[in-house]
Amino acid sequence: MIMRGLYAGYPPVKGARCRVVLSLEEEFASHLVETLLDHFEGTTAALASAASAT
Image 1: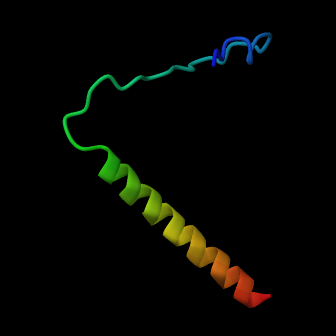
Image 2: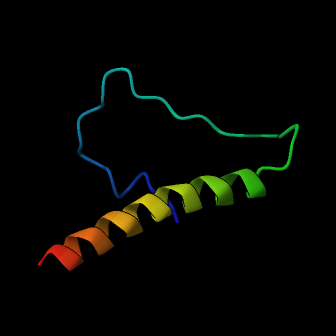
């Protein structure tokens, strides 16, 4: 998908930049999964707590 057309006409954002990972020194998938699970575990607990309060 070409994204250039999607954002055509929008003003440039000062200081915006894009980084691209070209190589990794370690396994990334396990780190990503652990980070996401930690995030969603907290979110799930907060949602369960809010649901039980109603």
